[in-house]
Length: 108
Image (cartoon, rainbow, N blue to C red):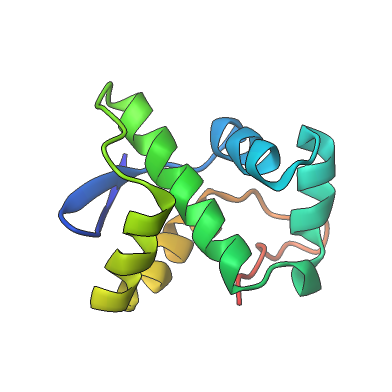
């Protein structure tokens, strides 16, 4: 399990659960979310924040902790600690399997 400092050190995990949550929040199917995320030009700042939010939800659930934060909380944590997004996207990039060209998905 990875941890990222938000309001406190929080568990964060990316995988099918986080993608499913992202898909639900974006109004996409699971496969639709995968297609959406594979087109780098689709991922704007709001999408990255939403994906990080889903990673924090997965981390909390994986450790059987309450989800005691909201998406608005995450936006405020980013204001207080802009490095949070870089730290979280690094965890995401390390969890993404290599693609056909052997390079991992990059986040803006």
